[in-house]
Length: 446
Ligand code: HEM
Image (cartoon, rainbow, N blue to C red; front, side, top):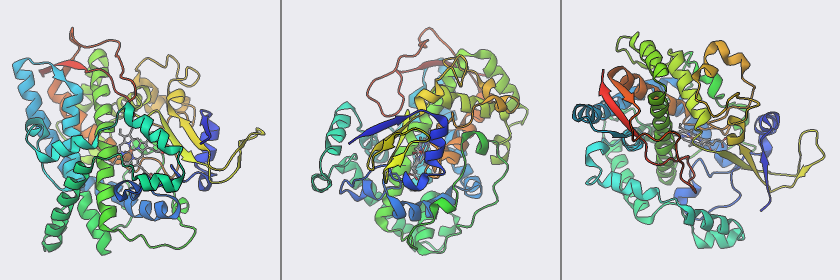
C-alpha cells in the first residue's frame, strides 16, 4: 500500500474539510471480527455516517452534564486512594493512579458498571478482562502491517482481531446481561450512561435532539463539532443499532478513552509538579470557585483549559491520524497526484513540535493557549483530537473528565517533584499512545 505523510496545515485542513468526502475512511478492509469492524473507528462510508449521526448527539453538552455526577463519584474514589498515599508519605505512580480513574469512569459511563480499580485491580473480573484488551505491542504492530499487504479476502478469512478472544467474550456476556436487566426495568430512564443512551437509540425513543451547547471555551481551540452536511449519507440510510454495534461501541469507547485520557492526566500532573509556579496559579484560579466544580464551573477556568491544551500539544497522546484516498487526488497547487487507495497520514507530531508554529516547542508553557494569546496561534497547527468531521467524537467527554479530576485534585493536594521524578522523561518505543517510563511524583495534602 502506498502512503503519504502530510504536515502542511493548509493541506490538512483542505483534505479534512472541503475535500472530506474523498477522505472519509480510515481503512479499506474488514478483519471479519464484528467487534472490530462494527466500531465507529473502523466503519466506512455511509455506514460510518449513519452510526456517527447516532453517536454524536450522545456527546452533546446536555448529555455530558447529565453524566458529570458519574465522573465525580469516580474522582471521589481516586481522592480516597490519594489521601492514603499523602498521609503515608508514599510516592505516586501517576500513570497507574490516573489509569485506575479512567478505567472506573469508562466502566461507569460506557458499561453502567461501578468498580473500584484502585482497590480491586487484582480481583475484579472487569478489570482483569479489560487489561486483556490492551495487548498491543511491537509484535502485533508488525503482524498488523503484514496483514495490510494481503488481499482483502485473505485478511477476512484470517479473522485477525486486535482484541483478545476471552476479553471479547467476557464483555459480550456482561453487556448482554446488563442490557437484558435494563430492558426489563421500568425505571431505566434514571440511568445516564452511554449504554442506556444506546439502548434508547435502539428503541427509537431516544432524546437525540441537539442540546443547547453552553459556551464552553474548549470548542474553539480543540476543534469543531460535527458538520451535519458531511454526515449526510449518499444513499438515505437508517442507522439500525444492533446488539453487536452496541458492544463494539462500548468497547471502542473503552479502548479510545481509557489510555488517552490517563495519558493526558499523567503528563499534566507531571508538568505541574515540575512547574511549581504554574501549579500555584492553577490552584488560585480553581480555589476561587470555592469547591464548586459543576459542569458549568469547570468550563469557565481559562488557566485550567490552557494547561490541558498545552499538555495535549507537547505530549500529544496520538502522533498521527490517517485516511484512505477514495479517488485520485491532486495535492493543493502542486502537480502531485495522490493515487486512489493511498494511506494518507496527517502528522500531528510534526505540527505540535515545530518551532515555526510554537517557539521553544519542547517547553511546556500554558501561556500559549490563554485567550489573550490565542490570536498568535497559526490555524490548523493544533489537532490533538484530529480534525474535520471524523475527529474524536469523545473530545468533550475527555475534556470534562480531565477538568473535573484536576479541579478536584489540585485544590486538595500539592503534587511535587522528588528525587525519583525523571527530568527529562524517557519514552518507550513501539507504542501506539505516547508512553513514558514510570513517572513518580510526591503528593501532600494542602
Ligand atoms: C485525551 C483524550 C483523547 C484523545 C487525545 C483522543 C484522540 C483521538 C484522535 C486523534 C482520534 C482520531 C481523529 C481523526 O482521525 O481525525 C480519535 C478518534 C476517536 N476517539 Fe478519541 N481521544 C481521546 C479520548 C476519547 C474518549 C474519552 C472517547 C470515548 C468516550 C474517544 C472516542 C473516540 C472515537 C469513537 C473515535 C473515532 C471517531 C470516528 O471515527 O468517527 N476518544 N480520538
